[in-house]
Structure formats: C-alpha cells, structure tokens
Image (cartoon, rainbow, N blue to C red; front, side, top):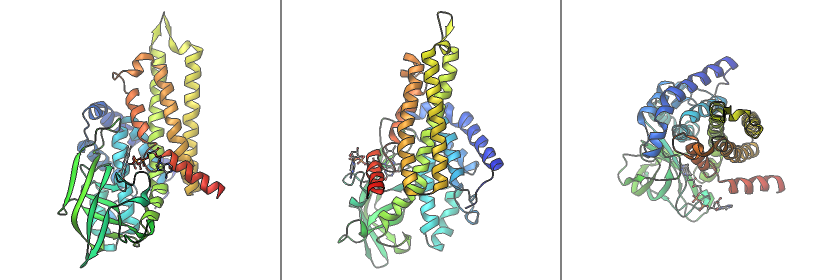
Length: 374
Ligand SMILES: Cc1cc2nc3c(=O)[nH]c(=O)nc-3n(C[C@H](O)[C@H](O)[C@H](O)COP(=O)(O)OP(=O)(O)OC[C@H]3O[C@@H](n4cnc5c(N)ncnc54)[C@H](O)[C@@H]3O)c2cc1C
C-alpha cells in the first residue's frame, strides 16, 4: 500500500468532493425516499478509481492507503452517505480477498472489483447472532472439495446488488468462535437467494437485504485465510478498515451539517436580522465547528497509531459526536431542519446507523474497557 503525499491527497479530496456535489447530492434525497441504490452513482465512483482505492496496482487498483480511503469517504458522505457506505462495504470485501485470498482468487476476482465491474458485500451479522460475530449459525460443511453452506445473513449492505459475498461461516460446529472461517460465495451459486430491500430508518440508498444460503456448494479454494480464524479476521478487517470508514462517513455527514447550518443562519432573516447575528446561534456554530475539527483530528491520529484500541475509541467518539453535531445543525435550521425539504433530517437518520455497524457502541465500550482494565 502506498502512502499518498499531501498534493495527491488534496487532489483526491477535490475529485471526491466534486463527485459528491455534482453527481451524488442532487439525487440523494430521492434515493433515500425511494429505498433505491444507484448503480449509476456507483459507476461514477468506479470511473474515478474509488472502487479500487485500496486494491494493489497489480490487480487494477490504485494501491492507496487508509488515509486515501477516509478522505474519499468523508467527501462522498457529504453528498450521499448511502453511496459512501455501499463503497465501504465493497472495499472491506475486496480487502479481505487481497489479504487472504489465494493467488488464483485474487487474479480472477480483484480486477473486476477494482474497476467496479462487479460489486462485493461483507456479510457477518445474522438474526440470531446479533452484535456478537462469534455466535453465528451459518455453517459450511466440507464435502468432496466443496463447502456446503446453509444459513442466512441479515442487513447486508450491497446485499441486493452484490456479485459476490464474503461471509463468516462455521466450518467446525464443535467449536465456538474458533470454529469459524471466511468464505467467498458468488451470487450465481445455486441455492443463494436475496430478500427484499430492507426498509430502515436511514441509509436507504444502500441495497441492504437478507441473503439466504441453501445447500450452496462453494469450491474449497474460496476459503479466505486459515480455517478457524474467521472471527479474528472479521475483527481485524473491521478495526483496520470498517471502523475508520464508518468514522469518515460520520465526519462527512457532520461537516455537511455544519456547512448547511452556517449557510442557513446567514440566509434566514427574522425581523430584519439574519439569525447568524444571534449569540445563541453563533455558539451552536462554534461548538459544531470545534467538534468536527476534533473528530477529523482523531480519525487521522487513529490511522497513524494503527492500533485496534485507537480505532475503536475513534469510531465510538466520532459516530456519537456526529449525531450531536447534526442535532445542533438541525436546531439552527429551526422547524425547517425537521422537514424533508432540506437534508438535515436525512443526515441524522443516516448517521444514526453508524453507531450500529462495525461494532455497536456498546460492544466498542465493552472491548475498550476490556483492553484498558484487563
Ligand atoms: C446501516 C447498517 C449497515 C449494516 N451493514 C451490514 C453489513 O454490510 N454486513 C453485516 O454483516 N451486517 C450489517 N449490519 C448489521 C449490523 O452489523 C448489526 O445490526 C449489528 O451487529 C447489531 O446486531 P443486531 O442489530 O442484531 O443487534 P443486537 O445484537 O440485537 O443488539 C441489541 C442491543 O444489545 C447490545 N448488545 C448485544 N450483545 C451485546 C454484548 N455482548 N455486549 C454488549 N452489548 C451487547 C447491542 O449493542 C444493542 O444495543 C448493518 C447494520 C446497519 C444499521
């Protein structure tokens, strides 16, 4: 992975910002209200190289680092957080193949993911396992060179559109989390079905759906990494890629909310005075701006530290603070902020989902406390 220099990162930010403003933002509310993933928007990200931002150049990616990833996601989320989250799911899955796949899998699959020709999903959560990855029930039994997969995954981002899924399965049912493994399953596999689009509070422009596996025969060579290490690998990918990604999306939403609050407070005039002249509104704007700067600094600090503890504390803090910032921005907008005529209420609904995925805030607190207290 190459660390980009300052100029390269500035260019990347400006390209992502332009796509967010010109291509994503105009349709974001429509996608939200219609529970509609946009393949067209995803293709725009692909054209800019974002679908291969972490993939090595040998596999048609740009070989970027995590700083590049968070800059892209922060900017895209300002236009459409759903599209940013769809990209993150795709990139976590691609990262799993890059780090853990066989040479044959990497050669046959990564180029199509890097160019965005194919879309990937990362599916861990199940109805019964909830927030605890080690409690999954989906099993994959080895039989004659194939894993036979039975089970289902819930709330899978990109579930409705993905060409392939990286799933956590039980390969040894006699063991708990130590009996789990990661497996690549192609959508065309017989026995794989996808449910209807999930209708949720936010992130409605993602193709979120249940994915069901019934007697799916998956080649043994599709195993990613060592068998028995599944939960460990999921946690590692979540802390290194998923959490910074979620933090970046939260940051982008918060930044977009502050920008809108500043604009609105200058334009909204009451009794001949812009509301920006009210000290109460000025204080809200100052608090929001300071919080967003702290969120951004913490996110980049966590990338430098590259430690699970810092990644978890950053994700916990940033996703919680994003809601506070957006709430204040809504307050600055008064009743208009509560209306669907402007996207602040969508920002709030989208940001709320970020506290639930790649470890809920409660699991993060439990893990952080365990790490600090033993
Ligand atoms: C926007 C969004 C996108 C998502 N995308 C994906 C995806 O692409 N792939 C995927 O696999 N999943 C995805 N999910 C699912 C997500 O990972 C789960 O919702 C999450 O793991 C929580 O599981 P649950 O909803 O079943 O909650 P539950 O497990 O039912 O939890 C309920 C409450 O109990 C708490 N809790 C549960 N167990 C513990 C514990 N051991 N210690 C402390 N607190 C606990 C939780 O924190 C929560 O507050 C997504 C979810 C959202 C909201």
